[in-house]
Length: 112
Image (tube, rainbow, N blue to C red):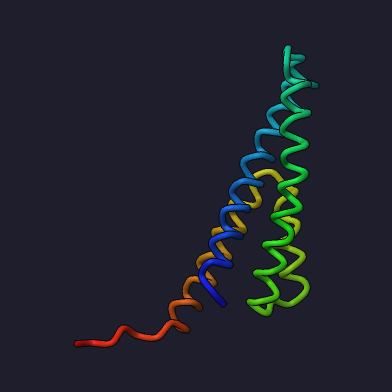
């Protein structure tokens, strides 16, 4: 597995996580605080999150298939983009796990 597969997953996990937190704040502003402009903000952020979540799903599935994860772990990672802040914690755990595996798989540099 290439490091770039992990990197693109990490980027999309953060993007999805940030948009979901913003969407949560927008919903609170719209329905609880009745703020002006919250409806428009929520609409824009929800559309962006929806489309980018699809990209997150593709990258997370690609990562899981290349890392040969069991189905349960794959579903856990895919659903992390639907729970506010979960994407950050899952990304951190997955990154630590796979970075150590990538370090083991990479050849040692040749000494001169």
